[in-house]
Image (cartoon, rainbow, N blue to C red; front, side):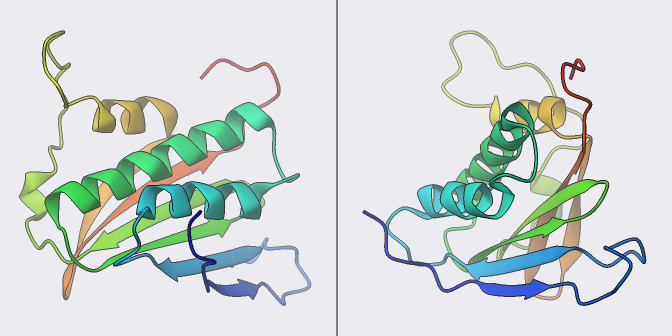
Length: 156
């Protein structure tokens, strides 16, 4: 059992239902030092998106959040934070870490060989999200994945 997270949650107070560009919901959480940060990220995303989108779409967002946190844990091994913003048009997941090497995240992806033990995570991020990118920060980097809502039954 993972410890209860103490996320910073803000609900958009605008009367436009998020149409002014502000998220309907913003949740941010420092998951540094947790024994199971990926599990915490999955729970956070599922809790925030519960009942707000189709299950397949939610599953995609959860899997990408899991992959991004896993990469941060494996490569940065230090301060890690996750945020989720829910909009009328979809959602964004952002995972920040203290690893400053933005170039370590490849811009163009190659398929992993069948015998490779890794190398599939960012491929999944690329396939499941509508768009993603790496952004430098003052104290590390942030990987942002964007998810546009899909019509029920629409192909990925």
